[in-house]
Structure formats: structure tokens, C-alpha cells
Length: 180
Image (tube, rainbow, N blue to C red; front, top):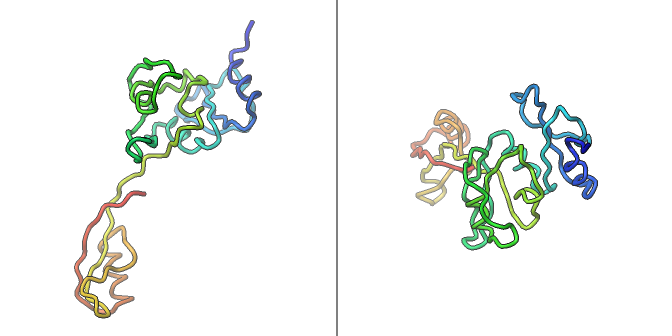
């Protein structure tokens, strides 16, 4: 009889540098965590990835969104989430990166050597979050449009900074969006 985790054990034996993530099947709400143990316990689900994909893979396993680098456009995208419901329709050896990422169904319980996280030619990152921040613009040292060198989470924090560093002055507060 074949061990339930035989595929994981063999993959880890073939490459001891693989990152190993596990989730308890009795308490799946606890999420995926990294483990230094070999994938041998039958009451756990496992997922393996290359070390360079460690952070985005764990983020993705726990429901976060990741992006891959598109070599054609030289940008990151599209977003890949665990909820994607697209069938894996092409042979891995015959797909371009763009074709693969538009047809691959991400399902952590069906890990395989063909996973995008097992391919070192892919660049994957956690999708940056856009957050609102405040900047201040005012005349300073001969520059009519001087921008304070720091952005702030609230307009009150910006007000405090401007008055403590630049004194009591009139300035324009501008709300911006930045990626974190």
C-alpha cells in the first residue's frame, strides 16, 4: 500500500530545499503554516514550493492574491487567487507563461510538480495593497510646490508633522494612493 503523502515525501527527498506548508485536516480554519518537518503525517494536507516562491505561496494558500511577472508586458499581473475557477487545459511543456496563467486552476489540495510555485522560471509576488495616504504641498525655500518628504495615514498626522517641522503655515493636503 502506498503512503498517503508519498508524492510529497519523494518531492522533498529530491529537493531538500523545498518549502513545506501544512494544514491540519481536522482544523482547516487554522490555515496553512510553514513546517520544518517532512510531509509524512497523514492527518495533514501538504503543499510544497520552491524557496523563492515561499512568501507568495503561503500568502496565496491562506486566501491572498498573488501576481506573476508577464515577460511580454514587463509588468506584474494578472491576479491569481485561490478562488480562481479556470481549468488547466494545456500541456505544461507547450504553454507560454501567459497561456498557463490564464488556464491554470489553483487548488492546494491537488499539488503537483506542475504547480506554478514549483517552476523557477516564474516570478511571483504578493499582490500589493493600495492604501490612502496624505501629503502636504506648500511654498518652501524658493520652491512654490515643495512636497513634504513623508506621507501620512491621516490628515491629522500630516497637520502635526507640518506644524512641528515647518511651523505654522498654509499648505495644501492631498490624498494619494500608494502600494504597500
